[in-house]
Image (tube, rainbow, N blue to C red; front, side, top):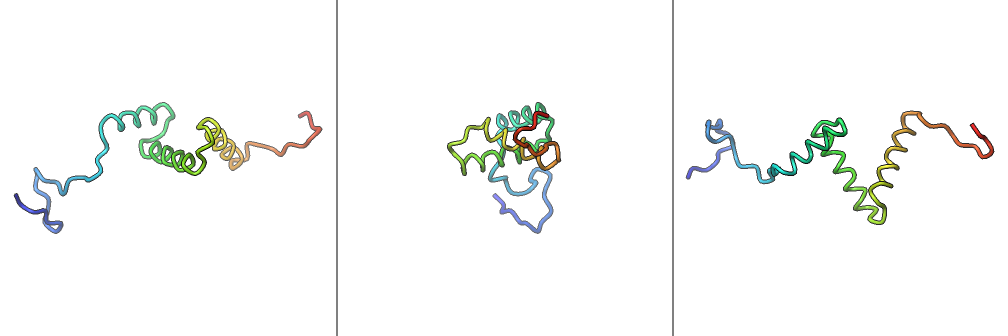
Length: 91
């Protein structure tokens, strides 16, 4: 068995060292389905799930639906789609 040489051009049958963290086919297809449903690219879907996972780890007592609503509210606030609420105003 020959050793992998990073300076040598890859042979046809050997495109380099094996990926130590390959994505398994079932999770990739699940990610692709979720990305399609929410109209996100696969990298954006993975980024979104990573963000949700981080928030969930930092706030284990918050349910996913609540986290999702907070993120939606932050996005609405950042895009100017909200206005300040004043008590007594019925508009």
